[in-house]
Amino acid sequence: MDYKNITVAGSGVLGSQIAFQTAFKGFNVSVYDINDKALEKAKERFYQLKSAYQEDLGATKEEVDTAYNRLSFYSDLKQAVKEADLVIEAVPEVEKIKTDFYTKLAKAAPEKTVFASNSSTLLPSQFAEVTGRPEKILKFTLC
Image (tube, rainbow, N blue to C red):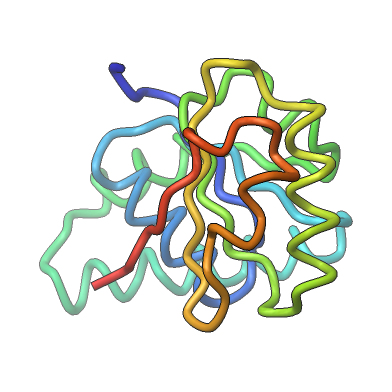
C-alpha cells in the first residue's frame, strides 16, 4: 500500500510530535482529538515544534511552515479518518479509552485503513478484535 494520508489520533505531547514529524517527512496528516480545546492546545505545541525543528535540526522556516500546512485538525473522528491510509493511535494509556476508541474507529475508517498503536504499556492485540480487522493492527514505536 502507498501511504499518503495519515491520521494521528491523540494530540497530546507524544501525538503532536508524531503528527509533526510525519508531516515534516511529507505526508498529509489529519490530527484527531476529542474536542476543539484539545486541538487548540496541540496547535500551540506545533508552533513550538516548528521553532525546535529550526533550532535543533537546522530546518528552514519554509520547511517547517510546509510541514505545518500539511496538518489538518478534526474533533470528528469520521472526518479525520475518511481518507486515512494509516491511523496512528496515541490516546491515553487507559484500556477503556483505547477500547472505546478502536470500537469507534472500526466503524469510521475505510476498509483500506491500517491501524497502528503507539502504546507503551498495552498490547495492540488487546484491541485487535474490536477493530473488526485484526490483521490490520500493528505496533508503532517512536524511536
